[in-house]
Image (tube, rainbow, N blue to C red; front, side, top):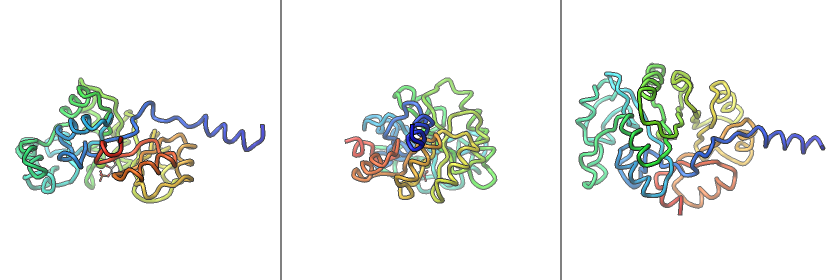
Amino acid sequence: MALEAQAEAMTRASFRPLAAWPRVVGHRGAAALAPENTLAGMHMAARAGARAVELDLRLAADGAVVVLHDATLERTTDGCGLARRLNLAAIRAADAGAWFGPAFAGEPVPLLSEALALARDLGLAVNLELKADRGMAVATGRAVAAALKRSRSRPKLLLSSFSPRCLAAAGEFPRALIVGRGTARAWIKTARALDAQAVHVRYALLDRVSIAALHEAGLAVGAYTVNAKPRAKMLFGLGVDYVFTDDPRRIRA
Ligand code: G3P
Ligand code: MG
C-alpha cells in the first residue's frame, strides 16, 4: 500500500467518534423557544425533535449544583446576586421563566438532579457544561461528580468545560473540552492531556483542515452556537459531528 493510502487508513482507524451522540444538541435546552436552562426548555427541545440538550451548571454557596449560565441571577431570573454566594433556597425563590414570556412564569432554576431525571424521562442525552468562577474550578468539578454519582437517573452524559481544571476535577465521566479561540494543535494537546473524547469549538474557528486534524487525533467535533440552517449544513459538510443550536426545530428541518 502506498504511504499516503496507509496514512489515510490509519487516520480513519484512529477516529473514534462519541458513540451515537446526536447530531443536533439543544443549546441551553432550546434557548430560542423557551427560557434557557429550564425544565420547560428541555421539554421544548424534545418537542422540537432534539435528542440531546446542553445545560450549564454552577455551584451555589451551600454546595448545591444548579442549572444556570451566568455567574449572577439578573439576566435570566427576577432574582439578583452571585449564585456562588446564594444558598439553594434563595436561588429557587427566583423566577427563571417570566422574563421569557408569561406562559413560563414560575419556572425555577433547576437542580442538576431534576434535569437528569427529566432527561431520562424524555430520552434526551445531556451535555453538562461546567461553569466555574475564578478559584471555583476544582470545587465545581468535584461537586458535579458527587451529584452525578448520587443520582439514580443516568441519561447518556457528556461533561464539558472551557476549564481543563474543572473537567479534570470531575473525574471519570466522558468529557469534551470547549474552546473559543486558538488553534487545532493547541486544542488537541489539551484534549489529549484530559483524555477528552470531543472538542466543542466556536463554529467560526472551524475549517476542513482543523476538523480533519481533530478527527485524526480521535476527537469528535461539536460546533457552537449554530442557529442558521445554511451554516449548519455547511459545517456538517465540512465534517462536524454535531451542532449546538438555540432552535433545534429549524436546524433539524
Ligand atoms: O457548550 C457550548 C456553549 O454553550 C459554550 O458557550 O456561553 O453558551 O455556555 P455558552
Ligand atoms: Mg453552555
